[in-house]
Image (spheres, rainbow, N blue to C red):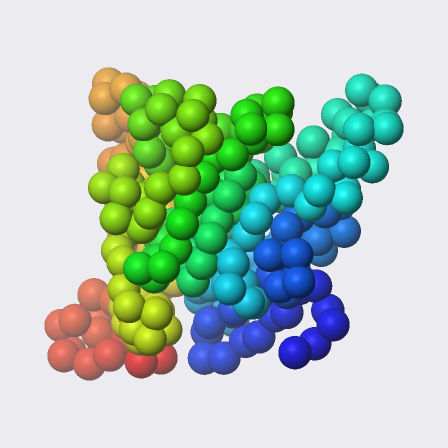
Length: 262
């Protein structure tokens, strides 16, 4: 295993980004946050990347904040802490807003900010052994920068319980409340992700990016004339795009479209 704290591999349209601090359960510090943010931005600008898998080395997905980092931050001023929190908020914003589909590969425990990473991904697959906690209040803190994404995923009602109790819950409960999409045996995790990647890469990359942006927009707006007009303009635009025309032609000619690498 490399000593690098972030590992990135690319194969057939898939970029796998692995948190690589297994000795501290892949806990965040300022260096990891900066490196992961930069890597995600780089992958988002790479046209060859069709999907991003967020994985972790060792037995834990992420324990949240590194305790040594938190001790160091306790000695900083409020202004310095604000700058530090903004860096973490930027990581969550970048991951949540990535134009590529993102899949969280959750092989073990995810606490605090680790839950935030999962919530920011489009799809989350967990093993039966995974455990979760929105744990910040145990340390007298709050899950602030992850809250927009966690509440959007699990809803206000479940957030009120789990962010206030900081109790641990298992993969079945994570699935019930919507934090993860499905649960698999540990030896079935990669096969499930392979199936998802194959499904994604069979689709038009521009359409996938447009659909992701559309879902984000629609989820935050009431159904009114403006929203209806916006969605109509989106489909009209993509119908006459190069990708839209290729997709229709491939369907009519009973062949694979040019983007399908499966």
